[in-house]
Each structure stands twice: as structure tokens, then as C-alpha cells.
Length: 119
Image 1 (cartoon, one colour):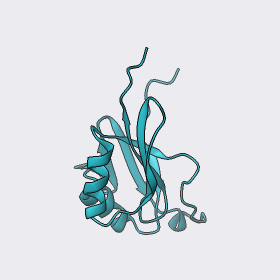
Image 2: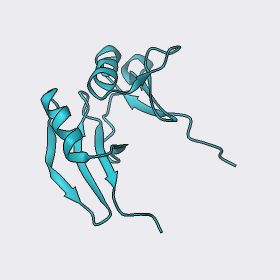
Image 3: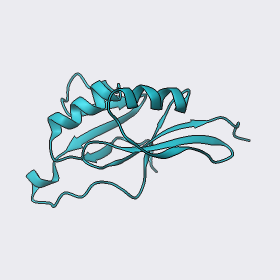
């Protein structure tokens, strides 16, 4: 029944700041038709401000959005040079490397690289 994932909603308290972080810091591709939408391959990240819609703001903390990279250590170093702070060390699950961090609103993100092939 479901054909694809249309977008991931990213709650924000300041959409302009969120846009700068996702586009300038993380390097996501901005959507040419929607100011607060950014792309990773075929996945759209859409920033929205719950406070402007009569909802209370809560950062997305229970499921890290995993951003696929070629090398977690190198990508982490690049982001740290831009001021991004990571939570703990890079960890190895036996099939992938991960490094956890947050966006400016506290939404949970992850750098991820799977190094073991999927059988």
C-alpha cells in the first residue's frame, strides 16, 4: 500500500536557524520551491514550528535520524570544526559505525556508515 517516504518532519523553534544548520552545516540540498525543506538523496527533511500551530515544542529524541556518510570519523571531524558537539565517541555495532549529535533544537541525529554487507 505505501509507495515511499514523502518527508521527515523536523520540529523547530526557529525555522531560519534550522535551515542554516541543515543546509550550511550539514550540507543538505535546499529545495528550490520550499524554503524550509532540505534533501538527502530522495528523502525530504521538512522543518516546521509546532509553536506556530498551537502545539507545544518537543525535540525528536527517541529515534536518531541516521545520515549516511562514507566515513563517520571524517564527517564527524568536519562537523566538529563547524561547532557541532557529539555525544560520546564513535561506536561500532559490528556492522556499522555511528556518531550521535543534535541539531540546534535538540533533535537527535546520527552520522552512520554500514561497513558490513547486507546478506
